Length: 88
Image (cartoon, rainbow, N blue to C red):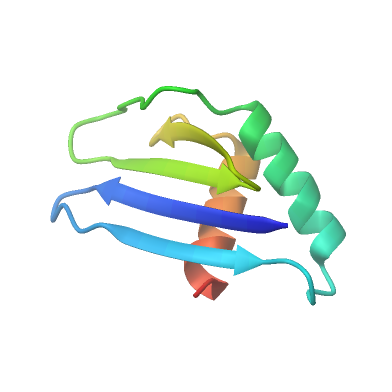
């Protein structure tokens, strides 16, 4: 499974992008579950939360959803954190 996350917004407005492939990961079943839940809880159109908050675009195997702080689900928050931390 290929997961891409793009984070925009924030106080500085810096765009951050990362991509993670779960093929060789030992925790792939957990990451797949997070991705399914994150996509299910996302919106098809961009959403904006609070001023200077982050907006996220999550793409899982070609399907893109949007979410924004502070209204991320627990799965979205964990997935975004994982991909931005460990993705390339």
